[in-house]
Image (cartoon, rainbow, N blue to C red):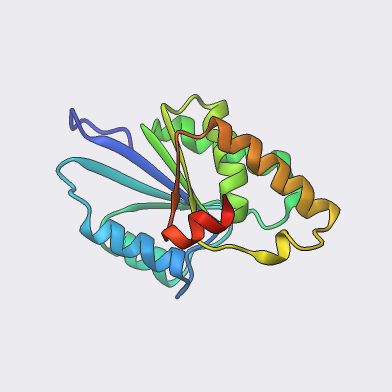
Length: 165
């Protein structure tokens, strides 16, 4: 993403994967297609795999990097790979999407001292709030802490914002 084009804002979107179909994935495709490319450079980081959406983004000239990290037990490797990519790309903004990317992407962006870090809430997962497992409680706890260090939290609807907050 390091661009010779002075004045463009570099944005990196971090998401779990970009297969055919989900709402978050389709939102990123629509966003990319409609962004003002004279003002913004956009790149995408998939924590797992690419797919239909990542292929469309690549065809349209966007940089898409898929890390192919599937297991959370490889946590250190995931963190190292994401931090390495962020440091190589030097984004002005990191915007994360979906559970794992919201957690790992924000941690890595903070480690890398990205100037602006945003989280996007795409869905309210009620199962995380009703009788959560220990792992889910840990995620919710860390997510709430990371919210304090995020520059913005984007909700896909006002109803969702009211439900979560």
